[in-house]
Image (cartoon, rainbow, N blue to C red):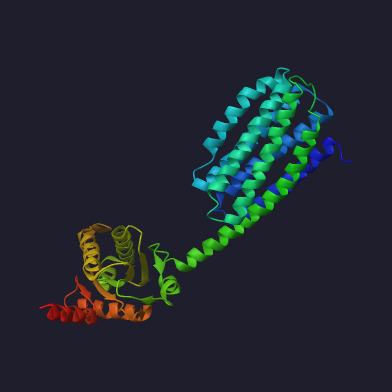
Length: 391
């Protein structure tokens, strides 16, 4: 049967292995900076565990005070890492605030002889930090439901095991100990922490792989310059669709784009593309599908719309873009855009066919002088026929 100190050492080595693994994972993809924060937190916790282990062998107020500081700062940083994961904010200010909030009240108790009361405070504070950590991962679970949900569960269980330690000390009235707490709750707590540490480490690696795969999917489906969907993603989403009469497919082409590159350079051309992408997103408020087809050509899909509304939205986007001043070095210039609109039919057309009709309407707009919006000819014919019938 392992004694309490052996269990502590096992926990320390388990945390060390997790720390080294997460460090290697962070090195492989440094954009996941919350992993580095976790590595720093685990380094502090591991230091606290080993110092506390020496306290269990030879108790003195200085040793337990140092261990207490390392553990509280470590658990505060673990919580800050979870907030960083969910929100992206830098963790160090938050870690400092919680470290001060937990160290300042408890340290005088540990150093002043009320170590039992200090352990109660430490266990309650740790429980709250771990449960708070669980809450952060739970709130972010939509990103990776499996790993994040189980991480939240393990943090909650670990938190409750610390709360149980505090409850036993309170129940037994042990406000002054002079040594490390020694009861069944402490042994259970270490066992849960060893198991939880292993589980959280494995889930952290799974989460990293999940994020890495999502990152590769985004890169494969996103135009790197504008942040819009690329042609491949657009066809992946809509190639198998059939388009009815209430859905518009719109193709845009920036007028005289080659001359912009020739006169002002490719950096100016890139700026034009970014500005137009901004207008596309603003014009649809992010509710519609927008994509860059390639070069200076873009596409937009408007669902549940009528010809008048589609033409109005397209015209508004073109007008706002034409009003934008675009800077290129010392020069400032404006650009225009042409657009073609096509709708599906009651019999429903496949997506590519409607896209080709919109492309044909675009070239009609180009031939008619640019800076225009044209609706595909078949729709105009239908409208004309309907007008004659009503007359």
